[in-house]
Length: 159
Image (tube, rainbow, N blue to C red; front, side):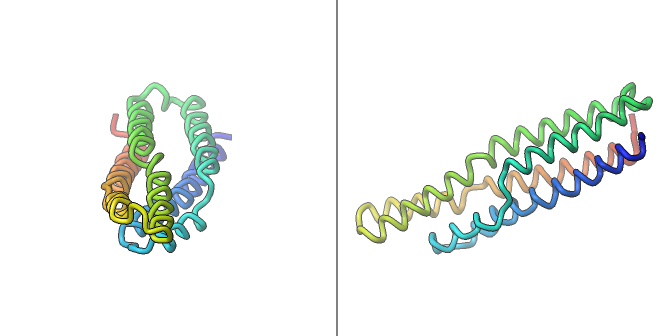
């Protein structure tokens, strides 16, 4: 049973990374897209964030279940892994959750401003600020570093 739970943990971790990677790719691609209409199409190809949340829960359940079936729960690496995951999740939520809303709202306002010629410069400035916001770089960097730390902890179990 233990081995199957570990396999399921790894399986859901891969699915999580695939779906989450699509979101990260769309965020990074948006930074270089000057056309607001085209930038809105980036959101068509990403999975619903609700699926990512389900995968997070499944990954966590299938990760902690084998820890409690063995001696791992008594070692520090498992708890440090949980802490790293919570910190990375908080950063992702803080810098990533509202980013899509900020991007799509700024793009829609610029599209509307181009049609009506009302507040065009303000809408263009808002769109450019959304495009150049550091959110995508922050969540990508923290995600990669967090993943590296988690893999190190799970593979080598140093504590």
